[in-house]
Amino acid sequence: MQIYEELQARGLIAQVSNEEEVRETINGGKATFYIGYDCTADSLTAGHFMTLALMKRLQMAGNRPIALIGGGTTLIGDPSGRTDMRPMLTRKDIDHNAACFKKQMERFIEFGEGKAQMLNNADWLLELNYVDLLREVGSCFSVNNMLRADCYKQRMEKGLSFLEFNYMIMQSYDFYHMFQHCGCNMQCGGNDQWSNMLGGTELIRRKLGKDAHVLTITLLTDSQGNKMGKTAGNAVWLDPNKTSPFDFYQYWRNVEDADVIKCIRMLTFLPLEEVEEMSHWEGSQLNKAKEILAYQLTEMVHGEEEAKKAQEGAQALFSTGSNTANMPTTQLTEADLTEGSITILDLLVKAGLASSKGEGRRLVQQGGVSVNEEKITDIAATFSEAQLKEGVVIKKGKKVFHKVIL
RNA sequence: GGGGGAGUUCCCGAGUGGCCAAAGGGGGCAGACUGUAAAUCUGUUGUCGACGACUUCAGUGGUUCGAAUCCACUCUCCCCCA
Image 1: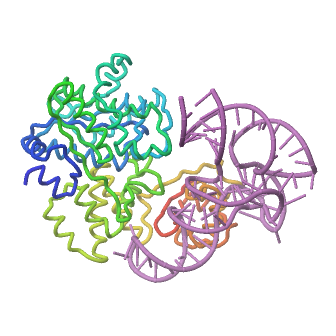
Image 2 (image 1 turned 45 degrees about the vertical axis):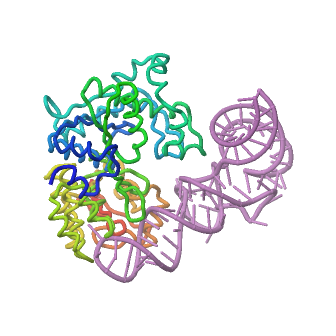
């Protein structure tokens, strides 16, 4: 099975600009493709992971990836999929974020001579002159068409600033630029980028009379239609300091039954035959599939060692009780104690398990907190210095474990 | 530039002088049931020294015994006309 067919079989391909040509190009390893990443935060997310995996798959099939850091486009802000305006980021923030992205990407993709390359569109976008740009590419865009694009339609009600409206033009310019200077003949990305990406092919066609290609991948959504890779509106980060490997593992370990196989198929590199087999699993057997999913992804993102730790930690906790080895831990200091002890409420807040004492109080009152396997029922419970020196394991709800040590 | 409308707690959205820490829904969290799943049911969801106190309804300043609610100015957004 060739790469195009594999991507298809995995359910990854959402849309392509020209199926025949795209298939031939990537199957033949003739694509130099780019995927753009706007650096709106200081870490990549589980959502980005999918496109990184795509990059890897295409690279393994002999194609040349370009990871494009959006140092320039982030200054504009992509309105796609947003109902409100993005907060404006400063140059400094963006540079910082770009540096973080670079580090994370290097874990997945090999960069270097003849391998993948990394570019930053700040390098060419920031030099542009307004009037020159308008004359050069502005004439190639039809406002009428742009307004028809999905990504803007959503914003017609809530308002769309001229700044954001130009995002598509910047992105198109990237493609145009790299087509000319880097031999880039294809752009990949999430399906929400479809209209932005087509802008680029359109520009290339008009300016150069040549064809470039676009391939988008299906956005990973759960059975309810929500984007995956988020918990309570917060992204699942690839940075271990923002989302610990344990939490990352747990996120995937806890996906719904209905979504496991889809996730394995789309996100992991397991052979399709194996996935096919798993798709027959039912009921609680799916728990095994969830473990596989969680392990595979954690391994790719955080490495084998961390993945094992996360898995063992989780198994130990959920089956036999407390194996505290790889648990998220909070280190207290003497200053956190009052008269040699600390109350349960303070402890919960310090450990980040409750955002306020009020919340902690509720948790305890509703029977959601255990310490060292013992349910806490008294909101006035305290823990002594000696206990803390031993280390205590707090369990919040059924799945959240946290160790606190002095 | 002219006219009209809106800004409420995580989100949507009620509330138009005291009965408002603010209806309802969503989401979150917890409990029951389970398979670390889903669905369902229940509780909970501003902060704290907690049957009380304190801080919130875009911002600032007023009126009032008392303001999310009234007045003035400011900021932001939307709609219509140009």
